[in-house]
Image (cartoon, rainbow, N blue to C red; front, top):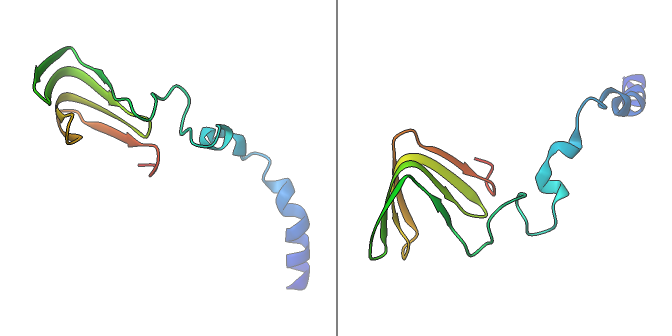
Length: 102
C-alpha cells in the first residue's frame, strides 16, 4: 500500500499533461474581469430586430441578445424593464451566467 502512494506521488504529475489548465480564460484575465470583450459593469448591451420602448419597458423582438458583464441572454422575444432589471424571455431561450457557470 505504501508503494502505491509513493509511486502515485511521482507518476501523477506525468500523467496529467494532456489537461490544458490554461484553457480557463477567467483565470487568465485581470481581477474583476469575467471574460474578454465583456461590456462594462454598468452597461447592458441590447440587440434585436425590433425594439418598442414604453417608459422603462422595452419590448424586444427577433434575434434578441441581452448582454451584461456577468451574463448573456438570447431569445426570440424579450420584455425588459430597465428600472427593475426584470426580464421575461420567450422562444428559443439560451442563458449563460459567467459568475455562477450556468
